[in-house]
Amino acid sequence: MGSNPGASLRDYLRRAYEEAHLTSEADLSTIQQLTGVLEPDRENLLLVYGGSFNPPHRGHIDALLSGLRPEVAAIAIVILPSEDFQLRHKMSSQAPGFFLHRKRRADIWGAIRSIPRDRVWVWTSTWYPFKPFMEALVRLTKADGFKLVLSNMIGPDNLKPECPLANPPYELPRILVTNRARHIPTKFGTNGKPFTWAGFGEWCRSPYGGTDDDNKPGQPRVILWMCVGMGDGNAEKRGYYLQYVRTVDTDINSTSLRHALVQRHVFNEISLNQLSTKDLTILLAPMLLDNH
Image (cartoon, rainbow, N blue to C red; front, side, top):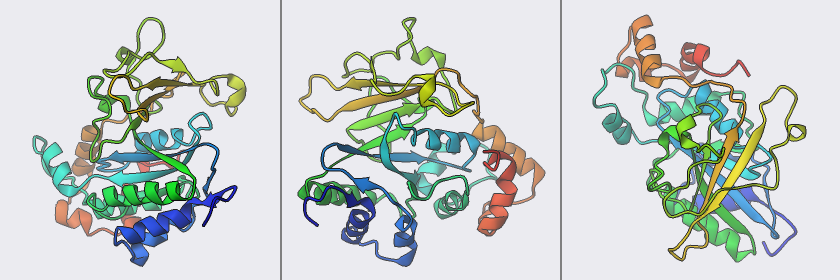
């Protein structure tokens, strides 16, 4: 491809998919609408938004969309639903009843109309080829003079300040925390900054963003905090905290949501996962998004 002023992210994604032996129409169709352009004179940030998503709901969507803020400047976001075995382990102490298989969770994400397909795609395969895919993507873009950096994106409830980068399924050198859907005041000190993470320096405010003029009318003001890894020689380590100063609480208790769905509808794991994607989105409509 050569060192062009810019190059299509989608082209590199396709090549990385092929290296990871993901060549089916189901795999490749998810990236067809992406329009991101890699730029040679800057870092190109790709966010990985992983989670159980059992089921996806409005809080997940609000968090996802916050990653598209201009302050973050991500070229794209990939949604990475957890594996069934990981979800079963997570839910082992909860009452059975509402369990969506990974493929169905991916199907629901793919059907949500408020998600911009030119900047977001859903990983429809398992976790296992995701690592070789990422490695191939970074290598291919680097060979043509582009710097692509990958960062996990999480909510503050999943943050572990003692080991902030340890986020399943794969630890990446960067992580973005967004409080768009869930604000936890104890993550911040009396000086208004997030508390310092283990292995990272002090937080500083991004020079871009944080003013009301940068926000759409009616949208809450945001600040992007940044910190740099210290002491282990990894110059790529970064932390980001996207703080919505005036939070709009869309926090949803997933356990209560599942319990309410089971109470209102008679189904088990088999019958639930046999529903069509359309029927699932109708079932979940009250807690999904068409409110945006």
